[in-house]
Length: 101
Image 1: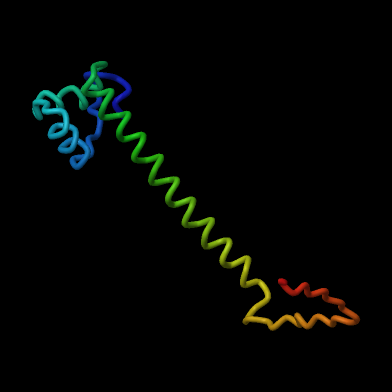
Image 2: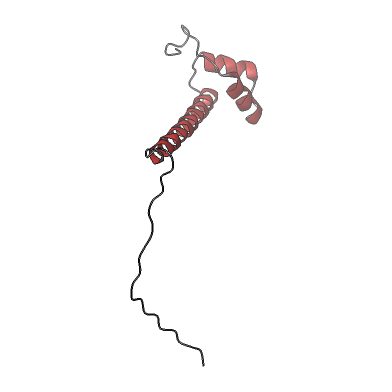
């Protein structure tokens, strides 16, 4: 969508549009017209760059959440908590203690 200016209108995400209009003090009607027509100007560039950044952040957060879930599953492979024998036998240990004088 939006590949042929004048024939197809580019879809607009309302929250992002409102944020750009408020942050950069742009005219809302003109901004909508520019984005829908996919004009090559600063308004459309800002809109698409911020949208791309938001999508990248969202994907990164989803991937992080998924990898965190995968890691937790991997750590629980052995089933319920298994007790490991951690007894260490120590024989013939010498210690030299020096008294402070």
